[in-house]
Length: 183
Image (cartoon, rainbow, N blue to C red; front, side, top):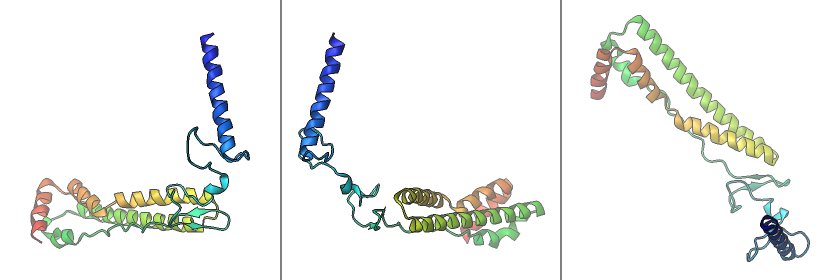
């Protein structure tokens, strides 16, 4: 009996909340508002110009079809691979042919990865600008955010130094640190 009473009371309170919300909306199904709230009910037309993550509706472009596009942030620039410090002292390190080949391979890989990330970011931004409905805008915005995050997290110079530590012998790396600090 107690469980039934609680369920009936819960349903009754829910019905009262819905009735008050209906009344606050002017009886036209104007939206759902919490009991005791002094806010106006939200109508579907009120949300047309609001984009996710930009709730104040400022600084965004709204197309004729109601598609909202917040402006894109600046593109993330990945620093270029700078091996000049290493190249200046490479002869003094007495690298063997295998080490030279590995280092050249690492340089090519890091430069290629940077170019791929920059191209992915450019393509994501272009896709965002070309998108013409809200679903495509949201999807393209996620791609822009992901590509920007990948660009922000990638530094080919840090990667190159880590690869140097792996390829060079302990003595060569110590000499690199010593001579590189003087330059």
